[in-house]
Length: 383
Image 1: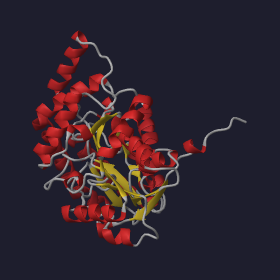
Image 2: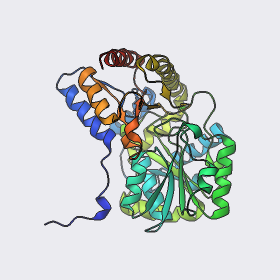
Image 3: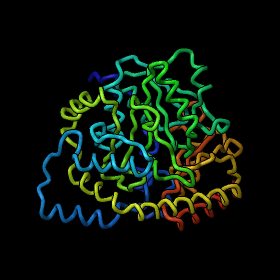
Image 4: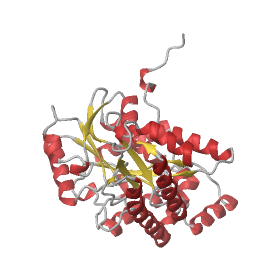
């Protein structure tokens, strides 16, 4: 019998399995509305795409530096000054193959096998899976609407032991909730005082409705901040992200990047550089997400779905539907079969309590969100 590594013995990523099912049904001609993937309906601004197309016609797409093009890293540094009024030197910015590459670099460069990393549940399932593949131990902190599905200092103080690391996300996936600036500052201080290595998922910064999400780089130079061009910048399939790295870790990350990936995709980096010139278009996408969110908050309660997360960012609602079903995987399958509407069962984000919840993505078109609500309401009248 072929022997396989325990490092690869991780859970399936259900939302991607669901995406495969949705694509198969669409290919078969079924009328499907997917509220499952966290993927903007629109792509990068056309001017940035035109710039990339021109480069392909006239330029050589060779390797860039392993940690990314200097001009893109400098432009991201400028973004921190413009958007947050925070000085983050380009020397600490590393371009990665998606944000997933940034998490992999973080876990490999800053932790050793057996180290424990605390994180909120519900949370993005790939966190746990990448940790386990690196022989790290995820320590999940159960959270709920009482703390806006976010970890607090009280949660941290109640842990049986001080963890080696802490991973936070604001706005969060799947709940779309924010950590207030004062709480974020307190978490940074708590970690520094105890030598806990802090990782902040800031992938959905820019996609907020009202107040901006704050960045850990304002409060500490010892944390890793991870971001992506997939969400606000609408470059999902280009597979490009970045990380702000503590100074002592930059050389370690560079060496990992050289050997694991050689360099991030060159064309994607050029297109990403140009997206910064067209944030007015990207902000228009965010305005549509807010319209979609308002529709869901108005229409879902009419279908009995009224226990909704206090979404202030990203493009997700997390809904407790334990009043409607005891098994959201069964419920979501019935919804897809009966209406063609796909949502993500909460078991992807919380293996213990996720059978009570679903995640609804509203990154698509407003017309699709409206039609999905109509179908869900009709479905609930029949069950």
